Length: 277
Ligand code: AMP
Image (cartoon, rainbow, N blue to C red; front, side):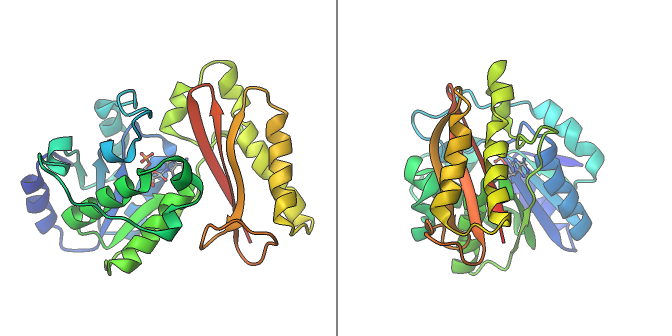
């Protein structure tokens, strides 16, 4: 496994790959969720590139960029048994050289949910993923269902910009108590860690009434809110039952739907979702 930092080393190594290439883009501090994407890429592709880059442009001014957890050595020790060809760990100066002024902006699908509460977040995501696609030229790129809107934005952007890249969305990997794995779970202290299972429990309760035949989206949102309210440590930011493709809130569920939520525990913001139908 090669670890490269500069763009020229990345390009030289990339040119030596003759078969299909899979890309797994991460911000590091890896866990089983990330490793599941790498394993899927390894099954599908002849070569796998993993990128580790904490992208400053997707963090808002009051978000956790400077505190975002990092442990490159541990990340490399987790990746190395998986048969990855190359890890690219560019510096912020490589990705955003002085005087940088080019951005990728995806429109309607970035407006609701996370986009409404994190202005500029998806502009940062779309821009960095474009740059990672350009640099690594993958045939397939792997993203987690955990970040459902991000996956939808990247699918849209890939189509709109005519990238010849297949976007593969992999299932959310969870802890045994249902909490979706996230580098940010590391911030949860004591009672908040236990309380954080309320996201999974709220989503499960809504799914249960959906499976019993409920199609009124407001009833599903109400059920999720009711379960979240039972946990005093949880401060919900939004609860949504939206169309899977457009991410617009629905009145009556028809076809595929996305149940999603963002919930604060103190300063820690967690997101989770289920797909219905
Ligand atoms: P991040 O390092 O948070 O930017 O995540 C890198 C990739 O891993 C993204 O495509 C995420 O959606 C995916 N990912 C993060 N957590 C999980 C999880 N629990 N299960 C599956 N994929 C995940």
